[in-house]
Image (tube, rainbow, N blue to C red; front, side, top):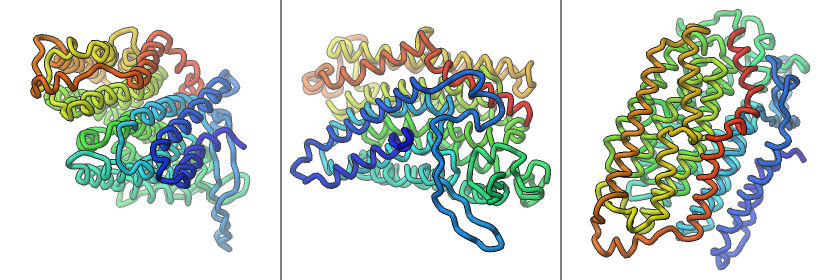
Length: 534
């Protein structure tokens, strides 16, 4: 069986095992879920190690970019004179996919370990957790748009219940807001997906197809079809391809999230339990960035180039707006949530540059932020689990009480603010380099966008260092007094075991960025060449 099929559906198998286990074994459910994520991680590392690079796996021929492909007939309906409906089970990965796949598998292990805090309805929680695991993994492996859409939508249902049932005091509000925001974008994505299907024909079978690899090739579009490059079709007087790009971009931008489509994120993070906050920030945001790369830039390169200025502007706004909002927060988890809005702005800025440096930086930023946001939300969860409070002003002198915890916080904060030697520095500096270079190479972005992005790093240093100074240093003074001081015990073995690999990863990627760049280089260069041809 194909390794990608195994890695996608392994969580479903383990979820079925949990469903069949008697309730009296409830204490074992977390170990089954952890085993599922560890098996996935082992498979993703094997895929990473066996992913081939070199000239034979790049170029603008999209078929050569993807490896470990499996294509099987899935839904084939005879429509008479209209031909056949061709929907295939089609999976495969390129360099960008494999990097995000390894990061996702790693983050899911951490999320499973952090699920130790869940005490109620364990069977339901871990079954939903593993369904969500399958969905996010499927998104990164799908090459058929119909399959991609199913996995993309499948994430909604478990997340809705995981937030709404195991979240905080306003969990129902946060869950409904998240669901409606995401569903809004997805409904319109469905319309564009159908339009693309009716525009593209498989050159081998002659049938309309949802194959995304075929959609990337302008030669496969029917002459005169709605999304044909040469047809110049319009929708309500607007360019059909521009409408398609904007609708798909909005759907993915909600996930990223891009300002002003970000308002669901702080509410969802604050109310979600720690493992779900980890998945939201560590993985779900990357699904949005990945969708922009795989769908918007690859299928609509002409519109991506003509609209690059606006993409860059949205990235800059997200960087600055998210940073200032993080600076104003009094809740630790909400501060981290807004910092994610700011950090993901660098992804959009790097992609808008359409340079090799910018796109490489965007992918590195996604991988880096996956590990760092996981670490930050886990650390916020440690405090909350002990005293059920996250108020930044409610703690002072934590370093004296929890020295090991403080050490990991210092690593996470300094890595997140872009200190050289850590992964975020590489992602941000390459994104900014691409933005600077874009002005002279392709004229897409003005210099001031890169300058404003740089200012976002400075503001980021402000809110991280200010939080560190207020919470961890000075005379010990807690809102809960001696009761809190007794409850605030230092990290236990499980928590150290969870945090140590994350600290190692953000340091390793900062010192050896080639761990990511070596795998993504062929795919990035192919995308840049394709965007230049448009």
